[in-house]
Length: 143
Length: 247
Image 1 (cartoon, chains in turn blue, orange):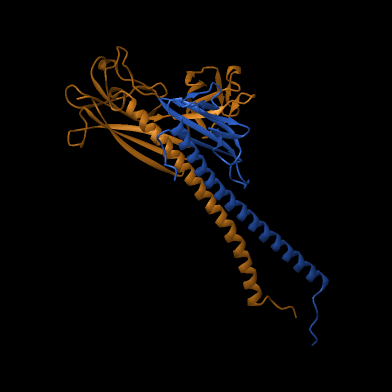
Image 2 (cartoon, each protein chain N blue to C red):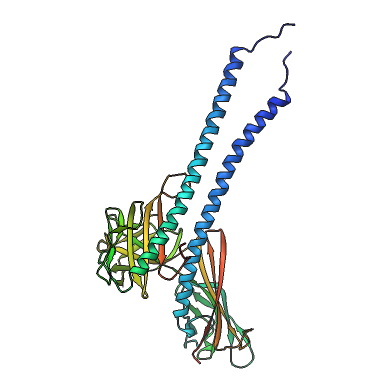
């Protein structure tokens, strides 16, 4: 008996299934990629902010915090300022990423700094903003 | 005649499905791992803060405590936010005897026993929940601040920062729906919030130790304090510290 070809319906169904499968695989790859990029950038930001905090704690000995908590007049006449989305220490930016908020307080004689950064890429389940808080003389030492 | 799928066709379909499922599971697993790491590092930082706080509190105000009930049988503990399930009292005069607790006010750290114990020295063993400290926020124009750890159980204290100074700030309201709402004076300013959330529990308990650092029921000049921090349902950190009275 002569083998019959596929009908139009069969071919259409196969094409739709292949299309759906391709879309799902592409989406999956994209979200996987976005997640790992976000995660690695977040880890990098934690490291960057912890280094910045250490520099602030070192420079901030004997300094005076500004009334709006956004910076400090250092004991040696230098300045720490949060301005234009950057944290500046003696005129040099401590972080390459934009800083949405920066606060500095002193409690029980120790400095506490908080950085609020924009999350690098948004993957569902990760925060849109990242808060990093450090206390003088505490926590894991930055590398 | 209509033929069935061949083995190869079925295997290809199964492999494609498995690939999809595996990549999704990998993301999910990594996300959980990342959340665990974040929660753990926050818990470790918080535990260090708590430990420092414990070292600064007066020896006599940490559990276990030696107290005498007032004429109505009330005892005021050195710490508030007490874990009511942890309370146990013993009489230190005469034969060792457990004392029944008639009433507790865990938030204010108050315990009532029978009036006949009034004025007698009792040893009160208990655990309390310490607050997360130093969460700092710049208050937006709306006056509403969203705290990091949720759900919030109790806000212990709100401080208003001005330069080097922190002053207690009383004009705030908290509700589960609206969050922490601060008064007009705080808007645009920085507040520091000490609070306790359900997701992070810092439970502090204590016991007396003898000179050889063995646990004992009777009072001694050495206390072993245990800080147990459970965080975000991911696990718990346990840290112990010794406190001693001045020689």
